Image (cartoon, rainbow, N blue to C red; front, side):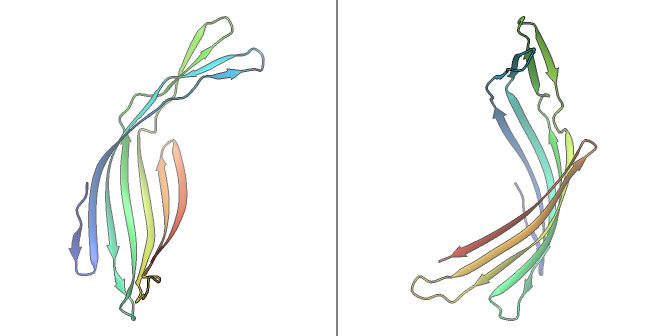
Length: 155
C-alpha cells in the first residue's frame, strides 16, 4: 500500500506492506558416518515493511523520453517464529536446533529509470523502458547487496 505525493518534478512515495510465506522441505538423509536425518519443520515468514522513495523526473530534450533517478529506504521486520531443524540420529534420538530469522533489517536502494515513447507505425516498437538499481540490505547479522537491470520493449 502506498501513495505518491508529487511536487512539480519530484515525487515522494511512502509505502507499507506485509508478506506471508510458508516453506515446506523434505527430510535430508545423511549418508556419512554417523548418519541420521535432518528434518526441517515448516518455515513461516511474516514480514512487515515500511519505506519511502524519492524520485526526480527529467524530461529529455526530445520531449518523448525521461530519466528518473531515485533513492529508497526500507525497514523490514520478520514477525514469525524462528525456524527449527531436527537432527534424528540412527538411534532415533532427536536433537532440535533453532536458528533465528532475519528479525529487523534495513535496505537502501538507488537507481535510475529511463522511458522513451516512440512514434511507431504498423505494429513497430512503441516504447523502450530500462532501469538499473543497486540495493544494500543490512542488520547486525546480515549484509547483502544486488544490482538489477531491466529492459522492456513494447510493440
